[in-house]
Amino acid sequence: RLRPPTELLMREKQEDAAEVAAAVITYCFCSGGMLVINKIAVSHTPSPALVTLCQFASCTVLVYGGKLTGLLRTDDFEWRKVKYFLIYVLSFSIGTWTNIKVLQDANVETVIVFRSCTPLAVCIFDHF
Image (cartoon, rainbow, N blue to C red; front, side, top):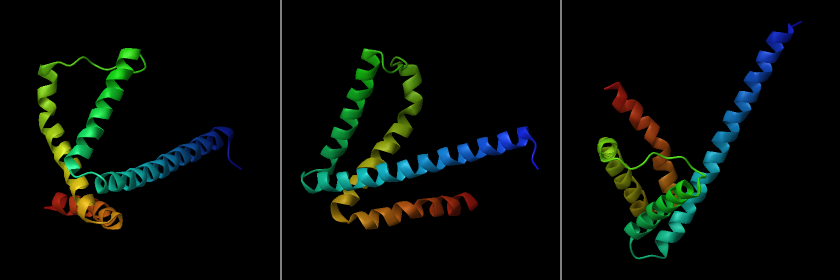
């Protein structure tokens, strides 16, 4: 028979595992849903860059609006901090635009397969 502290630890581990599983499932539904929404959006607009621009603009407005209303706490824009993130922002923007561009010409299933292969490519490049 397990002692109470051990039972408590096991229960906490099970609760943590359930939280992780719920987060993974939620992420999968959100990611898949956004992929379908992006496919619909890019099918009805002439430019994939416009879809990307609208998404970035709406995210910016949402975050800045949250800051102005006090719902979010964010740091002020300071060039000395921002300049270190420019390469990341540029890479992310190019990746997002490329994803939208692929959705313009390919079906959703193809994009999902290639996204799923990304960890494999990372493993191969990490090995060498």
